[in-house]
Image 1 (spheres, rainbow, N blue to C red):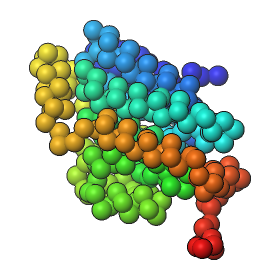
Image 2: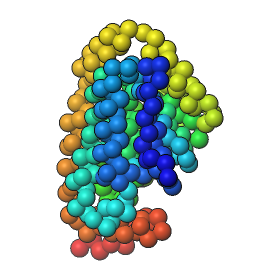
Image 3: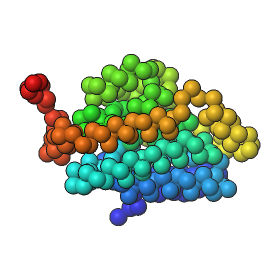
Image 4: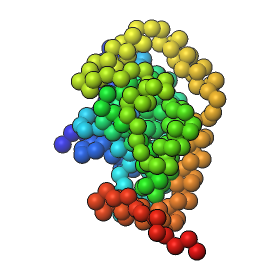
Amino acid sequence: MAEPIRLTIDKHIAEIVIDNPPVNALDSAGWFLLARTIDRAHADPETRVIVIRAEGRGFCAGVDIKELQAEPGKIIDVNKGNWDTFRAVHKGRAPVIAAAHGYVLGGGIGICGSADIILLADNATLGVPEVDRGALGAGAHLQRMLPLQLVRQMYYTGEPITAAEAARHGAIAEVVAPEALRDRAMAMAEKIAAKSPTMIALAKESLNGVEPTDLERDYRWEQGFTAQAYLTAESQATRDAFVDGGKTADFSKKDKT
């Protein structure tokens, strides 16, 4: 069985691959492993740029809802693993290129929204089905990629958007054929890796410093509401419906009294 997270470093490019079939959803241990792997890549003096991509049907379907269904208390660990991962992408020394294909959901949005550069395969769809999973999160990262009202539309409806739609709003560097995604990401990484590592590291730190919001603080705020949501019966009902065949809970007939 393949390792769920793989790291190779060659010619100053650290390539991190998510490979956790069937949908590249990660449980709490998986998120902690991904965070440690990204931190390890940043800490290696050979690394000048990082590429994060995935194998299989899609980039990342977020967290393992079945783990949370079985152990709701794991939400604390999942939240911490997510926060550590996104912080490692955003705050680490080296620029990070996210190269995503297929479904990019929940935590997959967090990875892309934390990255310095985003490349998408033309079969990619971006979504935040958090409300339909009884949780919250990744809104801060999605707002780093897309206009505020579009983010809210996606959040409230749970409906994804295509790679072409995302690119139309300017956050996506390129949309390419799936078979060309890795090559294009590596070519961009090579261009960055050929530059002064000191200047690139300083550039990333300075650019992070002039961002209009504090991404890590904003995401921590969202996570507080996830913890609050997990105390409600409606949050439990959404997870029950999802685990029972991937359904979406219907609250249209809920008693309003």
